[in-house]
Length: 144
Image (cartoon, rainbow, N blue to C red):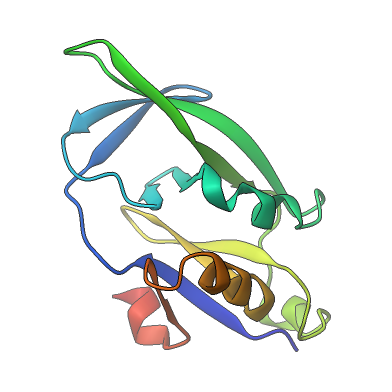
């Protein structure tokens, strides 16, 4: 069975985004741009990780370019993509995946989507940027 990990940034940020259109997000609270940005209805990841997520089956995930803008000064950035996860899995379904398969999904809390990745994706993320993320397989971290 595939081993799974909850992914979060090592550092925190007060940045808050609001989806205004399908692929556009407005900054509603300033903060630092981290490599992983999540909200109640989105998971955005910096483009330097795009090749990792493009290697995941298109049956499981769609990677969409997005624009993030600040209305006050009309500045924008396009260095993130949205990970649209197409299928959620049950524990039984996860057992069908081999331990080295590339799988992603999310866990929905009241205020945030939380990114879950397989061990194969975790290893690739760590190889690209070892100090950016924390990976946890503890259920308390996911629910907290």
